[in-house]
Image (cartoon, rainbow, N blue to C red; front, side):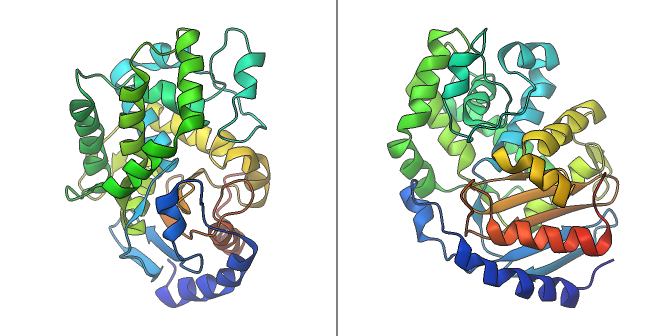
Length: 307
């Protein structure tokens, strides 16, 4: 078990790499982040949490929400329905690319971790209104974290909604090809709220622990999701979770993980622990540059790779 002093040492080693990255600025609200921030929490099955950095700071999930929504929709709609609309293959293209949609027949997104695939998955959340659908997803997040106080940032959701021109384009393309059939503005409202769900890296590590334990929460002794759903999600985290850097990440670090452009990383070391990281300085592919370095130091020092 790591000590807070060890973790703090790793944080100090990773922090200087922030100068090689920059915060996301295409969503105006995210551009306010301090690129030098870096925090980590590790959650163990016995309930022990070891932290370093400013772990009380709330940060929005962004693309990390994709893996949570995928788990939720798989539980409610089943594998057949989900993978009828979305593929299972990694892509070497950026997360917001529209190019592959035109190349693939039928024109469905290659996987649920790129924006087009995530929009198709969010579309499958049942409910008659955006409010009801979002409430269902948020309730699932509460069960994953054991924290019913978690909500979303209205400022970030609004900022994303007002600037999501490319995501709207993806939606219209998906609608043209029958992947989605709802009002695009309604789906964008739901999706931007989903991405703006905010929590601490301790909450994030707790979610990582649930995935690490195949959907079982060892703290509450509750099964949050079936083992096969957790397994599917962890597989996508390995193959597609770090955008188009997933292959390199698997070789260098080898931990199922999902990143977001707020600088968050959710990681699950199967059977052992969950990790939550926030470091807003991003590399050119949209991953936390300090967070990746931190995970690399952890993985190499403690042999956390699943390979």
